[in-house]
Length: 378
Image 1 (cartoon, rainbow, N blue to C red):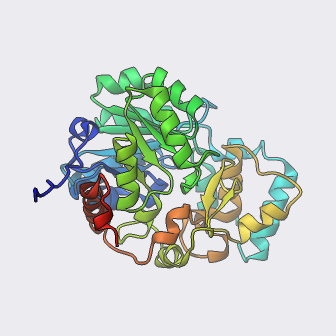
Image 2: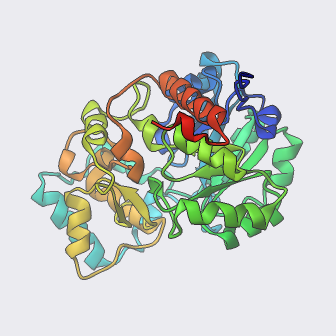
């Protein structure tokens, strides 16, 4: 009997990126910092850091830290909302536009759970920071000055910066949640479209991954498509490659790794979570965000008012809750813990390199079986 050759997972996009495996770790805010990104890149994938909440010089620091940990390609992810107040609106400026009823609700929730508002120096420093999504141009300046190999834009179109990115040798990826968005970013010059189904953790859309991917593949061909949303093992990788995608974008599974920048109890929550545990909430960012529920999300669900749009809701959260919203662990009842439905597959916390290796090995084994033979079924 002729023995099947082990299938290669190296796609044309891998060649273009200079990586060995079609596995990309999601840019999940400061959670996916230099340690996690470098670990994924060193394992043969592409690590991506999330830098939306950072000042431009903090972005530069992250990039340089990552370069100290790896000589492989990596990326930086930013949220690109509509070009609201670009130039850097400060938290204190945006806060003046928050309605009293929203502020009162947020402060009531915070007081109930023992969060104290204080006019301290730390609070003034927080109010002096740039509001989420209002300083993207300055952040991108740093990314291009540092010649980061890959830039990933989420939510908005990168059309206004694509030419500059290409001049710096930076490849541009764009996150989308539907066909209309995919067609827009492809026509605006994005090199790669990352299509995320609603099962994904963090900011996510309305269309399921299996329905979304073939439609996006048809709509933007020959632009490469990366699959995202509910992918956390080799089965998801193999299915995505068979469908025609050239890589997968993985978030939730990399949260439960040793290098992820969240507290141990948050990783334990992910291990304990089931497929139906995560919920969709707009209560932290003003956008649809899949996460594990907590007292903050429950209170907003029960309230008679809706969360505010970005950047107002993130500023409200920052002022009411402070650092705990980002995971400092000081109050578990209010700390945001993003997670996709793939959380039900996670049974332990492991090094990021192990996640990459296991996904690749499992995908290769599955693809080697194809076309499926009944004699192999067990």
